[in-house]
Image (cartoon, rainbow, N blue to C red; front, side, top):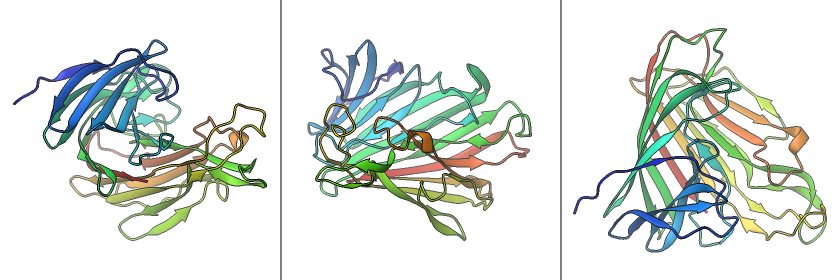
Length: 304
């Protein structure tokens, strides 16, 4: 049985925080179901397999933000993947998406502009991503293709091109559940692997890390951890200790060309803010770069 494409313009909010309005089913097939819900006047796209809510696409003002939930823990949400090419300092917006369901998984097709500044654009992008959830592993797995068409080359004026942003939370010197003070958050470190290099980035040890190594294949493995911050001791409402997922993103240039490089930043002024995405993990193309038509194979996974 075939299911029609359902077009969803993403004006989505933060997931899983307040009770949603009645969900609207967008598509279903076999064990898979996609529903749209509204929370505080904004929308979320929630993806299920056999009743397990394994991923959500959320947005603020039209971003394409994929959050994964491979575990059964109700608070096991964490790191976000913004699959939106943009230039440095841009306000992300303007994404639209189609979703289809099949017996074997979900297909997402997202399109948007290469965000430039506040509301500007320097080209177009689209990504097709097939998502599946393996409950036995458990693992959320995605594979697809990202295409970017820039309005011109990358130069001093445009700066570097960020192909995606993995956003997470790392907390330094905060009170911990069970006593004491230490580091916690949604992630602990990032293992970065290229064609001929591999290293580990720990946010508080090098808050801004932008090496010059380039590669045809770049894997960013953002290691999840158990978030044990004692928010009550910080003067906020208490939250539960929760294991956060590990998220791995791999980009491969097609045709193969060593254009990919890593960037990582950590906002030290937000190092004790449990609600902030104070870590950015970035696959980049450095300026100057003469090409305007870019294509990448994309693979992602998320495990507890």
